[in-house]
Image (cartoon, rainbow, N blue to C red; front, side):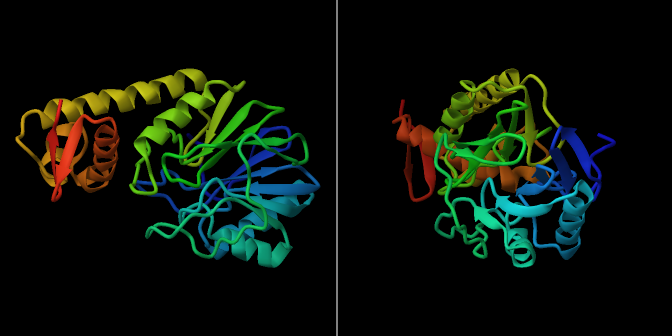
Length: 280
């Protein structure tokens, strides 16, 4: 973890570098990872928050590598991943690539892409292409990107090191999230390069663990809900997330909501006036 330092340019593979934004926190870990591809024509993936210090650090990193930023790609438009794109484009004229969705209170309205990626399409970057993999779940406009020459899968907030991802309905969807994790198992992966934290080895093992973890939590939701005639999110979050620091329960409650919505779609729970009950 000693290399996870904000502002420190780290080479992960030939023509692939990481630069961490200075926005550490409970939800962001050491900070948002921005990735740079290429040496002359440089593509930036997830430029991060609109922090002038980080924007300048990205410009200086490109200069240090020996090139110019010509493309800016985002995994999704949450405020710790995409807002720096506009400032970076203003200074470089780079093409913006990413997907947008309706504002749900968590989206970056400043992000206006020139190009919207398509699932399984290849995006040309110096040193080899990035394959766009549509990965809804954390949010509906999320894409992961597979760097085909290295087998590095850049997962944004779909997979993070050291913590599970928060799913925030309605833009976030638990069923989509689990399906997206399973879809990635079909690709030739060597490492996961998350939006927060360091490289994760044995990607298939990690993806399978995350699916199992979510399904185990889902089973716990059903088990604890069976102890109530009906329950609100506030009542249910305590027994379902009794293994989580209570200070994080307001955040965990969002993922609990996502689990319940999935179970409702599956016909296993019902909801009336904010109270949830087990049907079968």
